[in-house]
Length: 283
Image (cartoon, rainbow, N blue to C red; front, side, top):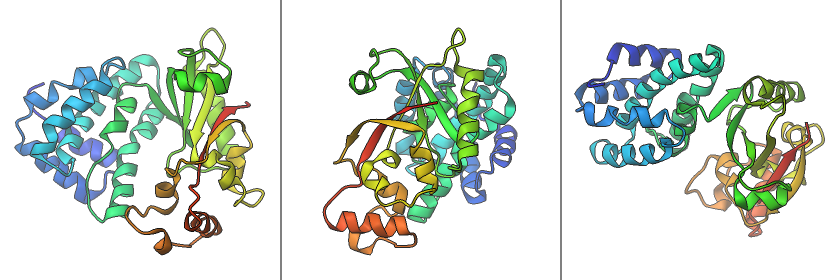
């Protein structure tokens, strides 16, 4: 591939609801860039065994040319055009492809909400979607991977065993019906010889500290109920960004729009991180 396919990229931006200002800037970068050295990374981005390294190489090339990540985005969307063909060959329906690639617009909107700027900063993550290692099935995402060694003991399984890591998108609906519908779809894409891999989740949403702040029947409580807590990290504070969307703002100035934010802010002001939990899916 020697040049960006601008009409195809434009059509995909519309299909994925890429925000207008970001799409325009991305397409402008594609139209003016020396494309061939960038686009030659696409075959590796589609190969699960090479995608992560290819992503790092692509970022190293794009960052000096376009620090806001929108040239990188043009390459990744070009890869997504090819991913669609690979998904179809695997029998992955187009609605799953579109839901999975919806990460691009979601990430752009999240970063704009946090910073006020249109920029793409999630290349470190989206190689998973592009190579087919991660699929969005309804409200949740599932990533197929060998079980990491550091999780094997707490989860009672062998390191390297086939596993599914559950991820909760920022727009996930945590009603029981939606959650269970997502879990039920795993078998269509990840079952081996009729058996599902071990399914786990490591997230701030499973933190015992967070659980204490939630009323019965809340969405996050609904999510927690489907997991057996295997371990937790009381020092992990990664959930702060996802709960407040306020990087760089002092704890004392964090918003208090919900009861969870109010309770979490009180914890943070006491010097207690939100923590995170490692859970084994019961279903």
